[in-house]
Image 1: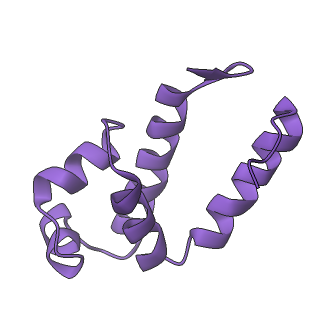
Image 2 (image 1 turned 30 degrees about the horizontal axis):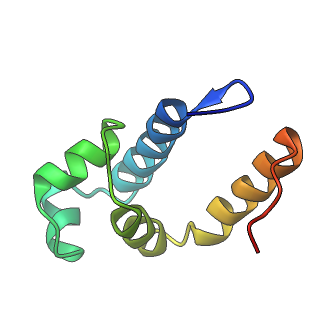
Length: 88
């Protein structure tokens, strides 16, 4: 699926990079972050690698690093840039 020139794969990769940057800035290993969030190291690794992640996982990590507002702002910008009508 694509939004303009942005693919879902691109979004997963960017989210993974953002979460990896946050984790390393907080000096956490994947194992430590997983333990804090009651997730496996494998789940954190897959998320950071841009592999399929559930929305729950993305939101849990985003919330941990206080990134929910930033993600919502990004969604609003994407809607404006691609003329996607909001569902609600």
